[in-house]
Image 1 (spheres, rainbow, N blue to C red):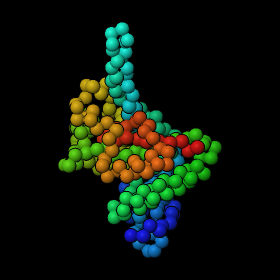
Image 2: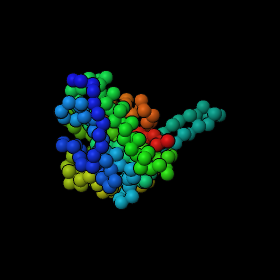
Image 3: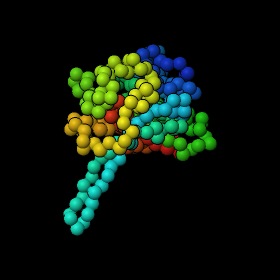
Image 4: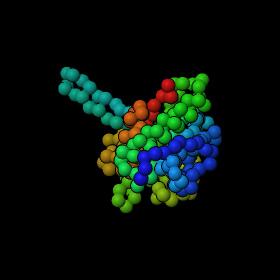
Length: 237
């Protein structure tokens, strides 16, 4: 498959794309082959999120217990529900053609991410320090089950995660957030299966993680509230 491609922006979703959580002011960015053919990759860029309805996430923090006299140094991780992303920008609905080689995928994804960033900079020229966020789906097992959902979320919404997503639609986070505890959660009290996947992305999104890191994104220490997937961020500046 040729590495030559062009980047285009459009307001309508490409065929087969996952619907973004928000669409107001948003644009789709596509990497298309120079010759006729299906897009090589795409993503959706949303300049501001959480203004029409809250977008929830868990802040992954920590509490440190330390006392030199007792030889004590213990770190405990915590989860705090909130909507810290309100007003920030977002890249979502990430897709890359699995037929591309690893080198081709990285080149296409990095170019696509850079183009989307430039577009957001133009839209938010008066706010150069605004953040751009990317939510990556959390890890699931071979049967498609999410330990994070099963161990933390399901007690508050007794349903299969796929069924809940289908029922609640793109506003999933906004509907799910009010059902979850607002008190600080100490992860040590959660099942070990949940603790093991905090911030762990779905395996097929690891190439996107590599591309995000290459253009300056880093772990924002926030998690998706349904599957515990990581949220990465970088400044527009």
